[in-house]
Length: 333
Image (cartoon, rainbow, N blue to C red; front, side, top):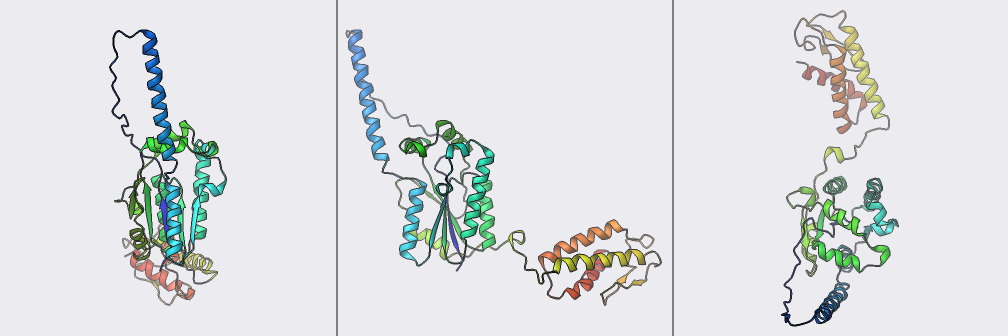
């Protein structure tokens, strides 16, 4: 069973909600004097302030993505014998406001988080990335990492309104708060996950009062096949330590043998190349019978063959010459 990973999404939303609730309407007697109106206004403002403070106290007990990450960690530790790792911004010891105000610093932090996830990936453990993950391209990079590790994954999106997130931010310790400018910038830059994208699927969208669908998330990780790795994300198992050296040297020798032999050959001749039992048909090396293949065309075919051979290395380097000759004969017909 493959290694599992969970990626938490951002705590901010890209759209704004209308939080203007119904306001209480008070009848003011036109006969009241200015002092009465001032006293009434003060009472209304104090009442509103007290009401707001009561809401803030209640919201302190609520949590966002970090609380969800801890809930998942507890669930998997109690229900399985697997180790659970939470990778997050806090372990890096950086100031979040200075990081998100500088694009280069932010890029470095994302790279550090990705590297830490990659280090902890194995066939048995669960890794939870507790970070904003608000950039679509970054989530795609993580998806490529997951494909490379051949492990299932899922995305947990903690969906809250901007106003709700702002209230949570206000009630944090001063050292953990986002400034208003940074908060607003993150809201504007947030790219919401879309389950139609393979890197955002399977997607679990959780509201602040929802209970996490633990069993469904567990099934997505443990009962689902890992995405097949792309060749571009797969480590190439070189058959020997000097495979690349042999590949480069042999193909270059073949090219030089063909190039030199063309000087004295005519269409229909067969050219012997070093290390190959098969021969190059000079007839096949002509697009037209009156034109020989120049070195630029041969080098292009050599680069293509080397790229293919890196992805499909042979156990026997002695076969490289024959393989290259066959490739040239088929490509130049």
